[in-house]
Each structure stands twice: as C-alpha cells, then as structure tokens.
Length: 190
Image (cartoon, rainbow, N blue to C red; front, side):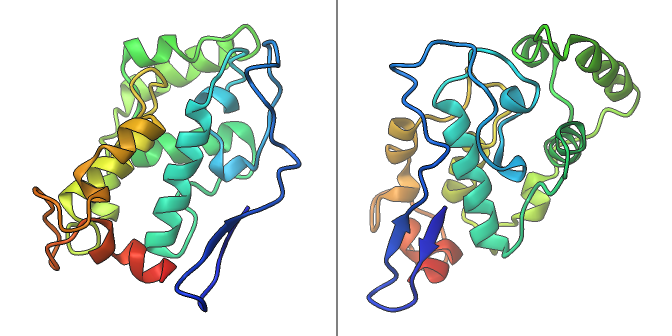
C-alpha cells in the first residue's frame, strides 16, 4: 500500500508488507502475491519464475492511477485482468508470448493468442495519457514500467536514469520545463 499525505510537503509512505517476500531467499515457483489490478501479466498467468519486474509493473499501475485518479486495469479475476491489460496495451507479439508460457496456463495462453490474432488491438496507452497530462519523458517511464515483456520492462535503476526524474535537467519537455517536478504526478503527491 502507498499512502500519500497532503500535509508536510506531500509525504509518501509505503506500508503493509504482508505480501512482501525476499526473492533472493525464496526458491521458485513463487505463488501469487499482491492485488489483481496491480499484478504483472507473468504473475497473472502463473509463470513460476517471476522477479522484481512484477514490482515495476505494479509501480507503473500506481503511477497511472495517480495521474488519472482511477485504476488503469480493473479486472476482477485473472483472465479478466489479462483482457483489460491487452485492451489497453494491445496483444503482445510472439516473442513476448513466450514469456507467458507456463504449464498451468498454457492452454489459456494459446486461446488468447488465437483470439488476439483476429482482433489485433493497438496500444492505447498514449491516448489515455496525452502529452497535456504526461510529458514525453514521463510517458517513456510509464510505458517502460507497463511493458508486457518482463525482459524488456524498465528496472528501478533504469527508471531513475530517465530524464523525467531529473528536475531542471536537460531534455525535460513538459510545460513547466521540469521533469517529475512539473507533472500531474507531482501535483498529486505534493
């Protein structure tokens, strides 16, 4: 859980680590952990060996929610959630689907691929977060966090190197000329 205080300069606190687990000590297969609207596709499809990338996906979901005021993917059950994700981000290509092949959900994955080939949806994320709401650099972070392919998803270190996190840094492009300091996200957390 993430708590955002309006007083004291927009303090952000993390709490309730009841579902947290140290992946360095735990051996796969890992079980499901978290809340469905924030779960990464590989976790929803029960891939037995996921990593900290699932946390980066969750961070992307939280970022989107802070910008829009509502959950980006609001499915209630596993496959409904996958449908919501692919409706926004488009159906993944063949290389990405390989990351979702798990013994537990292999048949469902094959069915999804067949359906999605017929209705190849395009990525609507930028439509939901236009440049008036989120700068190009901010969108790069959001899109990197919400990448379906876990091997291509933005890492924490990679995200922090993005120009969006450099206030008054070169290459920032939102209306105020700042990175994160000038975005709607900063307004929600300040």
